Image (cartoon, rainbow, N blue to C red; front, side, top):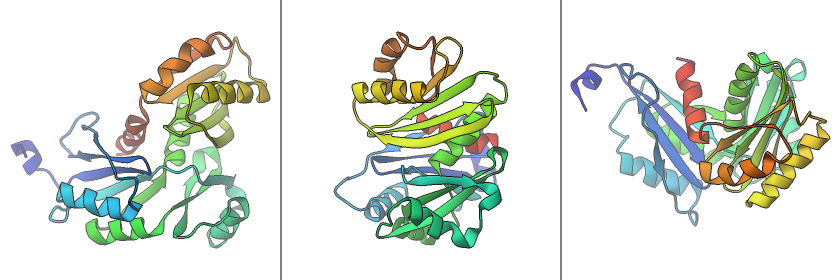
Length: 257
């Protein structure tokens, strides 16, 4: 650790937890800009908790203190409800009404006041509990919450309608806006370029978006985005690649400091 960092107060730990891999960054108060993001390959034959144990052990975080720990839960299991109808004691009941309950799943929620919605999401109960026991209080948020907040902020500067597609290895997160008003937030399981192209064009048509005026933004890994851009340009004029998903997640926390 360099001398600038050694003089700092405890740093912030940022962790992204997904079933296909973790990533993390450590941000010191003296840092400027985005800290280096480190990917971590997991063993997909093991549970989330078992992978977390190995992950934390290898990073040797047990002996280190953090000012705060921000964790992103990457999950397609989320649902939205209007903020004015939300009651926290009914969160689990509403979530399980929309999505079938799963073993070892805890229901959390994030309030997005700017969009006037609440995201209810499921996460691994055992993994979250173990992480809190090992490294202290953890502020957990669903990835969908972070994406909606950032996309809505971007839309406050735009007048056109826009569809944002967040492309993962096995899924497609879809977020549609009219100005900064959220029209839709959903996920679609798919793992091929042809399936992604189909769902994007199908949703564009269902939303009655204009092929000449409205905007389509693609974010995720470039290996998923690049095969789509040329094909989409045949049907939609404004198609724009964005930053990777990991950068979007961590940039949100930095922008809130």
